[in-house]
Image (cartoon, rainbow, N blue to C red; front, side):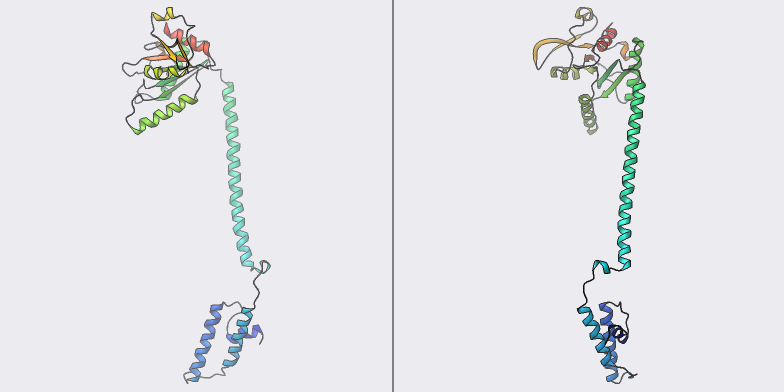
Length: 287
């Protein structure tokens, strides 16, 4: 019996599954049993041909070769095509977005560099480090702007100065204090200002590390009458040098609220780029 005839005898389509074939054959067996028991009409029922058809289909399935890649159905091929097309489309979209962001970042950086290049050079950069200004009374930006204005008022020939205020609490009582202190420590390690103005306790903590420039060239006699000078040794030398000058209650801090009993010490960074301007600033506000 030919295969297409076998499917017709069994009453199923040629793409029927194995479960459908078994189910249909069981139906014919039940009908055959019903006819034998007189529970159904014969109606020219040919169980022998149906059985041969079933066996033909089963033999075909048993020896049917495994489908090759070339014999996959069109539906499966289309499914694979759209799946990989979707993946490739997403990958291309992500690549274009990353490329756009990268180009935009380069453009923004170039614009920022042009803007900075057009500004006057920085005559001196000062970092104000400590807890002498209550963080609840003013913002860092307000402090920095006021300090810059106070410096430029005394040095009208300077076109630009840069002030950095880094609040660092001396007493750590909360998790927030720990986070702020860690942030300020990182800022102190990474920023490279020309000079620092610190709480006395912070100055005493850092002076021995050798991070400050010796101020011996400043006339100690002229300053001693008005300002307290701070001499110290470092970890690498036994000789005392002048490293700090107290600038508390000077016009440098006009308009800025202080903590009570604050002592502010000015010091110059050891590898400062603008040492002379930093010295001029200390001398000017010491008068």
